[in-house]
Length: 103
Image (cartoon, rainbow, N blue to C red; front, side, top):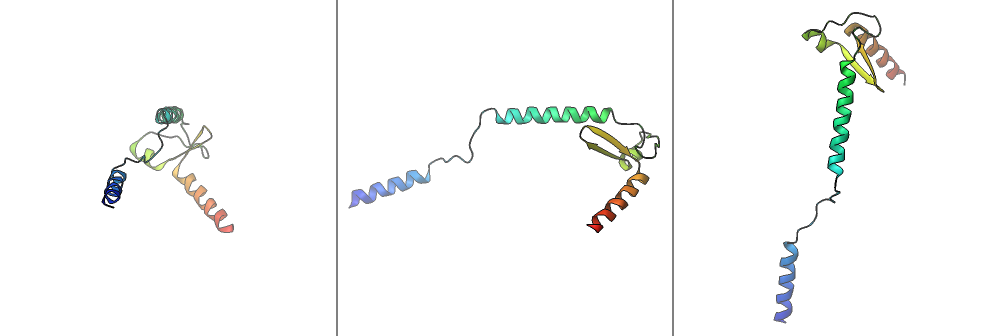
């Protein structure tokens, strides 16, 4: 009886100290994800460098100052960059709210 009890204690102790895998390791997955993220970032940065120089609605000139950079809205949809002044953006917001209230 003591031998069986002794082996049970040993198996419990070894099971306690077993190293379990927390996740599956897929070789190269992280590298592919980093590469895809880097390419996406480069593409978005290039799109922002080629942004329009005026509002897409009222054609107001965009002067690159600290205030205008914070107040103007930039929208990117399917590789198309749109620049919107605060006045036009406010109109868009009101129309959008009205459409959401109807639904």
